Length: 500
Image (cartoon, rainbow, N blue to C red; front, side, top):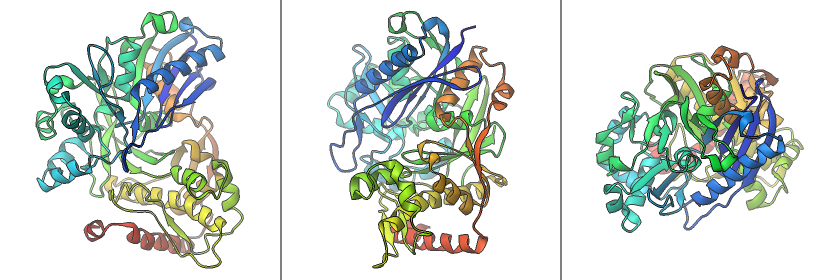
């Protein structure tokens, strides 16, 4: 048996590759950022070719750093930014346009049209999703409608659609595999959670030809092999899951009711709800957590659009910090927020409000307010959004919340983690290996090829690096959350405020 697993972690701002050993520890890591394109307000695009080239570069680099070759890798696991949409020509393998990123809002008018036609209930029942520009289906329709000749070519079977997982596998296998896994499929608004297949009615609603779609596979299975010229020899590709589902798996949330939150550009909280999808009454999403063999596990998900990105805005937009790491030190110079509340709705609000037109607000400013108060309020704004989502999860699932497993870049911020524990009134646990997204992809691949024997072996590898326990009293937390609720109302658009 080869000694290592290679995880490819393709994110929103960078491509990364990590080699893991049998204990789930990092052997080597390589990362490269790539360009972000903003051609119009509300539009966000990536060059899919740049994504592929940077991902291949770091994969080769990480093997070189660890002095490993293809023979040393038992399997490759892939995890990816979800919903980002690529359409390419099957003959040339070239994209017909830039990839439309999950953050992109250009298809809001399509979503409004679907709502006006009264299709929200049908779409939510079948997909577990709300009608929103976030998901891939409307992005695909936009490409077919707006790129000259795209719809006709798609109907002739000349084009291929995929999220980033599909795009990577297609290139890794030199065009042999056009597939996606069940987790990524469940984020398209085209996939029926109950049948586990692409849905004809949804395809008709969004005017998507079936010929353009990838095949849907499980998350832990032999999916294909890399082209021999990429790494010297073929390497099995055996694991695939969207980044948030991969993080849930990497956090060993294998039991019903376990919850993880990833603090990245946005925040993404998932709760394992076992093998039966639960319809949310609080605008959460129901999604595939993973599919292994014939068994599908589902999750409730709440998405916060702006998490760690608010820190980047304080750095790049306001210039009150020089680097993202400065935020904790600045926030710590004041004992509290001084009455300042920051709702970071810079690209709208996600769950449980789903108001794409909400706008960021900073309330409670006085002559005594300082940069420290704004910094502290920004960190609290991340934690408040997560707390709102967890409240909705608790009500939808009927399950008690005993703790939160945290990962992602911003989970390194101790003040944020302590604030989160205070607001949730439960322990927040940060694992010893915080690269849980890549680790989840590695676990899925390793289980498929027998590198790890079973999920129980994986479960035993999880351990907490630090546990943050609630410190503030309930009365103080109640006042803070009341202040937050009032600030959120000022951010919501009138129609959302009325519906909420």
